[in-house]
Image 1: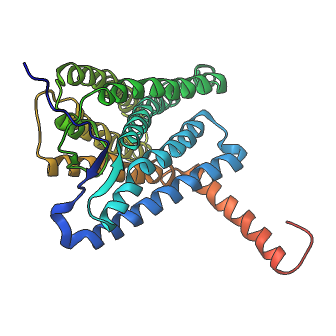
Image 2: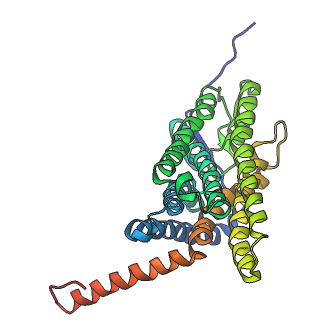
Image 3: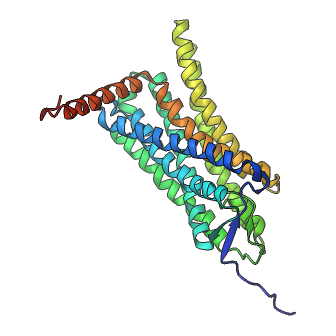
Length: 323
């Protein structure tokens, strides 16, 4: 039996949205604007929560870490997407591709755990308000946040290591806008059965379990809201929780449809559209839903802006005093 003539792939070419050449400029402008507002919105959340003492609560600690995570999560994929829209067929080295894959899975898994923790925090605040300060102390909050990050670090290792051990002998064109698991496995010229099975069960463990825990928390929250005597109070709380649940459902729904489907292959174009939702859209929606609809946070933003504008006005007048 003659040995196979295998030439190892050292770089990949990301095809991105090559079938939409006439829309490249418009897509670049749209994604750039979304990326700018995503980063700026999350930076504002981190700055306001850090500076306002009234927001030094578990709920806002979770929100600050989610915002920090979203900046890095969207920065893992969107800048490369923008570069690809400017120069068709962006080339990426094998090591860079595996690095991007690791951080994408790491940040994505961490977000799943953080969203589940935030839903649990809201469940305690609404359903057990008298015991909330004991059940969600600052120490417990810190431990939950640390657990989310550490679990995410571990979750990202296994898929990226298994993908990096596969043989890639051509073609080297990834029909996607970043190094994602499904298109990389489709390019491999070695058996992917074990890798696909491990990633499938890991996806179930992370995505489905976190989504289930989040839904259970919101079921208890909704049942508690229904007992609120005031109709206006019910509507206000329903509006906030409904917005949270809508964003969470979009994020988990698109992720589950992408990764929890063994032996099922959607077209590359459908995969790209689905990926846009959880890599571009939800990082933009999270700061809007979790902060701008929050009365305390909006008041904190106004307070910080007044203080900053006051300092700037005094400096412009040449005064050495700061109000």
